Amino acid sequence: MIRVSDDIVIADWELTESFTRSAGPGGQNVNKVSTAVELRFEAARSPALSPAVKARLRRISGRKWTRDGAIVLRVEDTRSQARNREIAAERLAEMIRRALVAPKRRIATKPTRGAQRRRIEAKKQRGAVKALRGKVTDE
Image 1 (tube, rainbow, N blue to C red):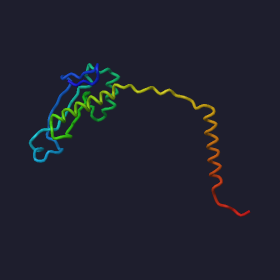
Image 2: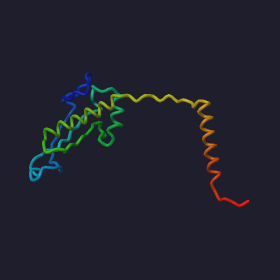
Image 3: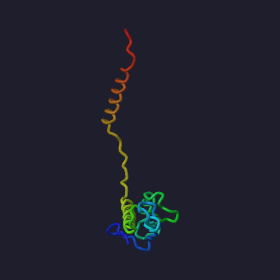
Image 4: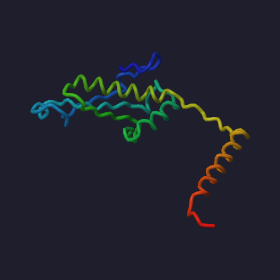
């Protein structure tokens, strides 16, 4: 069970963990101990998330989102299987927290008349400076 926020909790049935041999640090131990964690979260079927959150989560997760609507996270950062499990759970929770925040709608605004005038004046001034550059002719 992963607690994402006060009102969102990911149940155990939505999560699947599998362990494989890690390519990370570990010396000779790396060949015999399965420390890498692959955490699979059934996001599309999760009752804890609203459809809008699922849509944002799909965009945030990118290639980690599978065709059947699951998020697959692979963690092999440390030598400890328990620590890798914690890291995977925290990454998933952070990803869901980011998806919970709805982006603000942008309100289109017009520049003020004064701002337009100042911009044009600055462009004219800059053009005048550039016009003065060039070859000097004797008159």
